[in-house]
Length: 629
Image (cartoon, rainbow, N blue to C red):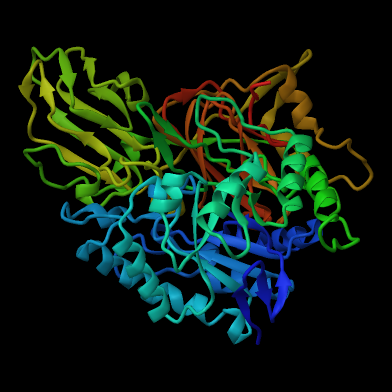
């Protein structure tokens, strides 16, 4: 049992001054078998506290449910923090931003247009009350005054950048207190007069979010909060990436200097992020400030600990700074060896059209008006829109495309409509059947476009006349992959050229994945890698289609899957959705957590456009893309 309080100048742990040295780890972005490792490495860097958001939509994809299994086992995560001798800060939102799909708000929340999010509106607050009723017992029972690690709980998230409904903030305080939260409650805002005024209440402890000019920004925070400890509750030590842009990095030296300046003021800090993790599956968010920009799969964030748990130059630089302000363990995490490098033949495939009966209920009836994906209860992933064309049809138009639609006439691709290009119209060849494969690329997580419907937004017109009678099929791609469908058909055996010799790729793969105890291989090299270096397999894949292959691996050892040359799509290993890939970059690899691997494994990709090569390559290191310098 313990006590944590806010004093006139300091945080007080059991009555004694305590500086919070925290780092963010989002449990829902890290494989649960890696939680203990990441928490331990945070302590070894000199941190004493772990901070996490709670992603409401991950726990409650449907109203009434609250999933706490596997990667969503918040109780286990908090218990591991306690086992490491560290403290915890919990930020349950309900809005979290976090470059996470919809800022953490469930898609189903917006199906009733009367719901007013992030304000004291009865329908919204009723849903929040249901969420807190399921979440808060997990947090409350693990507060420091009950023997647990939780020392602070945050109310909302950077609310001053969105609204100023004080009654909403007070309602959230009341729900937290009624749910058993007894530790101090905080708010966070960027340190401007307007945001600090709008985003908090006098009875809540204000904290700031920034990544530079600490003395100046803490002075603004102090003007708004004359007493109590100063805290930067999000010290931005890196940044996130968008598809088609560069990979963001900050110099370790500059970031460490900014951290030193902050700590020299006596303030507390939480590093955003300590380790970023991954937007597995369809969980990435997006921004839209006139141009739609979906976030990439990797959430490495150029954090001190990499996406795959490797210490970085920034880790070492921060550790040196933290040692000036508190005890740092002598132990240093061991460097991580390069991942195994090998190739896998994706030697089975099935077109999306042939797989359709297992992806969706193809018997659904026609509807006259164009429905959104949300109207059909499809809040992530893909949907197929189908209609009939008139013989003279030439130009197809929509009110809006959210977010990307591949257009087909009689099964033949005719073009792409992309939201970030503001595409709304496309010319069509003569034909009868119209198909549009629509992808939700991630919901906006910041600003007024949170909660907008996905899919094709009407009106839909052909040469200016209304196009009616649509069949819309939500596609269950995760379920299809997990089913191990028998629809996949084998490719011919693969042959590659190596010098003057024809090499049977199946035999190369078999040999390469069978360890030779008498042969010591250089890291990252293999027989198949040498063969593939001189030629690629001849087998191509016309999209949209799924391709599948099997491979042996060492369970528990992380891998990096190269997606170079695959265009756009999704990848799974053993049914675990690794996330999106796109040759726009910046990233050209997907992180494969070792715990998802078995001795024998199945790799499946959904290739939307097609690829010249169905050879999958695993590489020694991640490639997160080019930087801006």
